[in-house]
Image (cartoon, rainbow, N blue to C red; front, top):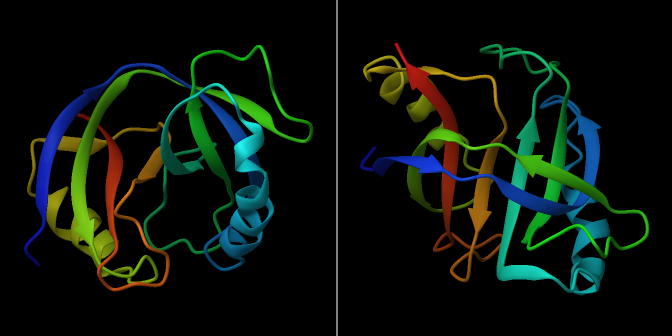
Length: 159
């Protein structure tokens, strides 16, 4: 798999959006985004048009555990928390180091994550860190399109 990657330090971000508890075996991503998309314009202090799809794990991600629960968020980055739409929540994404992968293809194709966790990470100078994982869905993101582009951000720390 030919995937471009880089290491980047992320500065703290303020986020507003919706969340749902789920697991990979009980994936409610479609339900989450279906409830968020019609209301995203209610977030008036967003810094850009990029949407983030974020996974927050209470404990470190366990390889191969499809029943491990996590919170999935559909969010926008905002300048402040002064105006939070009804039924939406705030989240502070703390600063840290991330491996960033430029991905082109269907978001349902999980081979990119197999590559990251079974190939790239074990052969790198890094370990997985217990912080949120997220994807930036920018202007070239097209849901259900094989030409869709997104950035996958994986939290890492030095070995």
